[in-house]
Image (cartoon, rainbow, N blue to C red):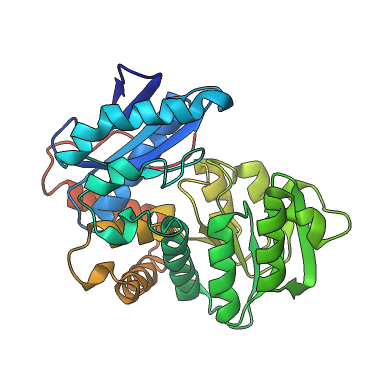
Length: 341
């Protein structure tokens, strides 16, 4: 794993397989982006690409800038990376603190399918992530009649809510940084959408009179728990409280190694993040029908059905499949599997 520091702005890119193959990843902007976390995200992307048979390295970029200077910093980042993206060596999508409009000059020359690079409408990434996450969830537990909780609610959470509600599920709890909102009767899509548009992370305050603490979401009585507020949010301490039958990531590596092990001991099925969040990658890199919505849903369902019965557990089964593909074109495997530290 190499770290490349940019010249014109306080930013860096972590990437696997030094220039051997094109790299794919996200860029995040904040006052301080840690290189360690970026390396973990890059590794998860490497494994995801390999799992679905793509010779593409994982990457993750960070822009360090005070909030009032981030716009200028992002512009400098875009200008410096433009040659790499133009020549096809790098493919970058927006992460926290960056929008797809911010990256418009890069996305305009990005060689991925226009499905993921267009800036004409809303960011396509949340909807594509919701597509793969819900497809994986449904392969483990049918959504019709399921009670669902969404940790780390946001644009992707809203897209997940729409899909699971259309599938016959109930949204019984959501959480943001402002707290947890619980409803035994379930939240409607209209209430979630309107409250999110009006208040962002504070939507929980308009959904219920007194939001519960953020951590309460983990212990919510439900069938399916979607998680993804941050890397490692589902550690061994949080895992103790999970009562869901199925845990589905909607963002990279939300579980630690100990967290995943504990959930396994509790007979909770944990869908690998490299499967559940694969929608944008499949849409962008696939040159066949595998990149269409139907193709993504079919591929994710099929793969989830195959790995859910593996005696090693779904996460390790997915990692081993990715490593088997990497072994067909690399002499040595990357050191370290995609788990949050």
